[in-house]
Image (tube, rainbow, N blue to C red):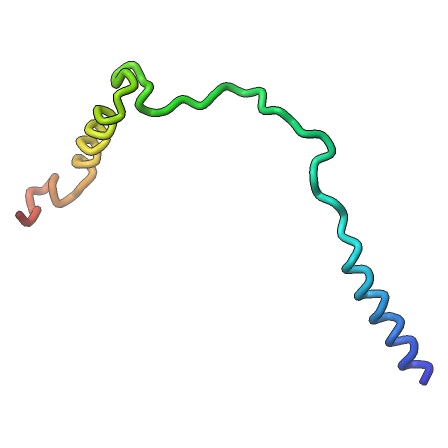
Length: 75
């Protein structure tokens, strides 16, 4: 009987311990003080033209395609 009571109290203590979660939110809201991220198309080469940037990206990726580089591409 005593063992069952001790086991019950230990189980209750373990269960109640799980209910005491510590708040993980920041106490103070921090403001990002870094530089603003620039878009890839805002580079001087593209002048903010996204289509021009996408075309350059597609052209560059052709050089990374082994089928196109070796001439083994199926038409």
